[in-house]
Length: 307
Image (tube, rainbow, N blue to C red; front, side, top):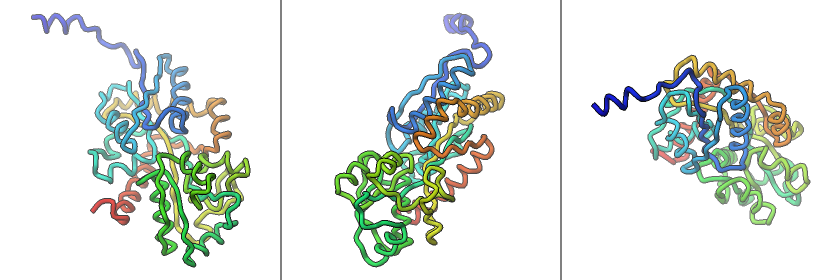
């Protein structure tokens, strides 16, 4: 009787959205992913007319945040930030996840890996660096890691050059570049936005970019592919929801998120931060993520991280 009374007194929710929406972010506050998520949340707040709140769930290369999204109720009130780690973590087999656990909403940007050296480095060009490593030069390379996309890019570069770098993992690209400036490393692999301020300030030189074309931020910096090295490694970011959200809600959120990307303050931030904004709507984002997932599945096997 009491259960029936309680159920009868429960107020049904009104049309979506009738309460706040949460955005789960895998990264710590203040970084690029967090800032992109917060700008997008601000735009959603204005368009949906309800509070849109960011919540940081840091840990296990994003698996903590991804699991929180996967197991959330598919009611339209929880959105997850979808970074490149979404295509990597499921293949490491320490957590039960796959990209199929999520409905993808939209991609925001791509940020290719960049090989950076101190301004005082003897390596003036990518060709000089490649020739030196192939010739037996021992290079101490730092990057976020282990098992980050920058670490995998470093391993892939070493494999194509037939050499092994002295690899130093760091908790993020910021500490890695600090070690570079302190003279503890010969080079760093990081995202273009993570080193662009140091490049513009003259403390660091970019030798090459692991993108599929020149960076719009540094168009004169060669790609590794232009030097005959088939290397494509990049961070990217977008948004997702737990699988099973009503199609009408997914479609509406997709359009609101794509519109939120156009906020003038957001666009200004992206230009300042060096982000290469390349939005993709839901269907194309799914194709992109599936391709990335297949590629990283092969890489983690080839490098021996799983059997």
